[in-house]
Image (tube, one colour):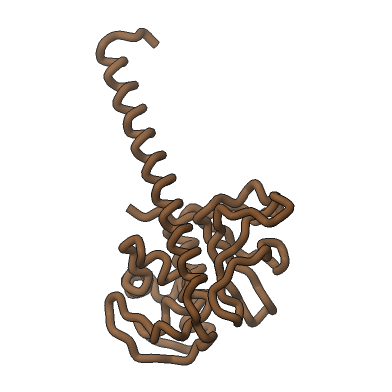
Length: 201
């Protein structure tokens, strides 16, 4: 390609755009990881019971929560309300979510929809970058969302952090699997069902 002034300007523009997007992604991921790690300093009793909450930015009492609440509360530190985003997506594509076939629901419920792992999986599958399931630690980046099956009927979700396990091979996961939000070396301890990167504009 002949490098005339027009082509040079185009390349500079593309390079600037790539730099801005890359910087944004790095900054966004770092902030999400920091928010997830910060959650591990909160004392939270594992409780997934149904609560009527506000909308948008509704939340259950701060002293209770489940695995999905770690994700929801971390994203809210960045100004991203998954309650509102999941609800909006479900209104347009309700039967693409498992709410009807799994729980017999006929309409959205902003009190609980976003707090269910299968619904978050459906949301991320349509709105995030999806990665193949891998058991190579290098394929997981800080800020990535991972879902697992504890049992076939008990799904789980967590956030990949930038803190490595003592052997420096696996990133620790910020999650709540029953003992409150904590950092654990558990990336490959359960069956992985999804790997997502959600960096919304």
